[in-house]
Length: 101
Picture 1: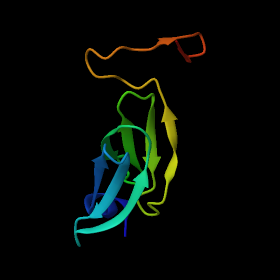
Picture 2: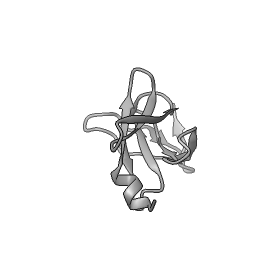
Picture 3: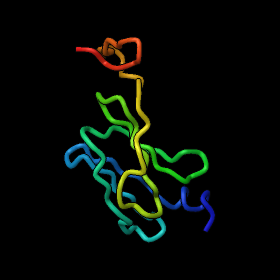
């Protein structure tokens, strides 16, 4: 199966309550897997080639990347700064880009 078909047949469902993403195969309505991604996942979307499912984290400075075929754990994290919602405070950063208290 090619990546475009894989992307169109799958749905990433975010659960803030369990801090996880569930991948559902829409052709069979079956759960392919659940990955726990961290505090307050917000939105899930496939990158254009369909090889990764990216999950944004509300109030965090990273995006979690998940392999939609393996669906076992995060591939890695794309560290911020990540855009925040209107009115949400941006952290103060030092010269190296690290958040300061």
